[in-house]
Length: 494
Image 1 (cartoon, one colour):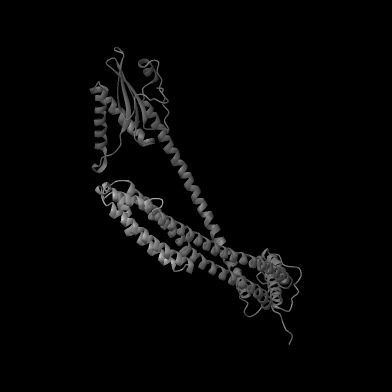
Image 2: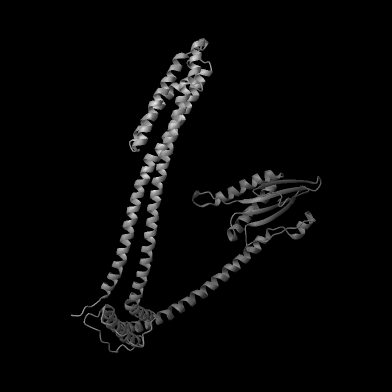
């Protein structure tokens, strides 16, 4: 039996080699990063803390030198702050720092451990000398003892034990700090070298991956992508509703099997298209043969053809019934439209007549001109009848005029204007002052509305107005209003 290189084997071989190279890169990267983490942990937990602690110990030594010098040179009491600082440094700060450095020194080289031990021994000797200074000059009075003062000055002098011991300790600490920094640099350089090796390996493996990927891509394109591309073009053409003119040649592999199946699908779709066109044209007697006994689409199409034929018969019968019903409804609507037109004309005539009645309560133009010369009235109602009206009357050589806005619009507002007009005339008959007239108007309107309200309920109807009284003899204008101003100021102008 001849060996058959299937698509799965082709893809598996190519990706297997690529995966092998990728595993090498990942393994090398993992090892390098793991070593770098260990080195970084060593730098973080040993080298850097060691340098920092040694620097702190050096600073502590310098501080002790400064404080002991201050102890000797400046006469002070036993509880002086500098003396307290020196005691805390010896009794608390140094032991804590010594303990920390000893823990770190476990990871140092043997030579450095030996050096730090010598430093601690020298520091113990130095602090014993400090204690001797404290014994010589414990308080203010001790500074008066010339012998004690001399011995203390001798200890801190340029050739004194404290000065020499401190200088020796600082030199040793500088040497240790330099060693620790050097070791940190070596560890860092080793880590950088590991990254450089990783970079070089990644570079060559990357080149190998690219070259091999190109080879795999070319081979895959020729053996897999090409035939698949042809199938894709046919499928895209089918998605647009266009059938290919020629069948696709099938090869002896999985793609060839797909090609053979697609050719059968195209043939079936063409047959289905022709059948659908015939059914759409109303040819319900067109014959159609399903592709197989399991062809659900074919069975569905045959059922659809039979259902459409039955639906066509039902629709024809329903159309006849609906046509007769629509004709009947049309006649009824025409009758209703005629009745609505008649009612509209009656309502419009009534409203126009109401307009004439409402205009009858307005003062005549000659009456207004006679009593209010050099004046004008702007009256533009929104509707045919409305709740807005103006009122002018005279009494006792005075002219009363008002602009009234009744609640409601249209016919309801017009009725309110009649109520307001009558109430104004009645209020003027018994009152002269605009304020009194408004009070009487309010009572009269409320009484009228409440007396005519149904079921004992009060209404919220009323009116807003501005009422003025002009005395022609005294040349005096009086004003009273209800939610309407006497004048309007806009943009700084009246």
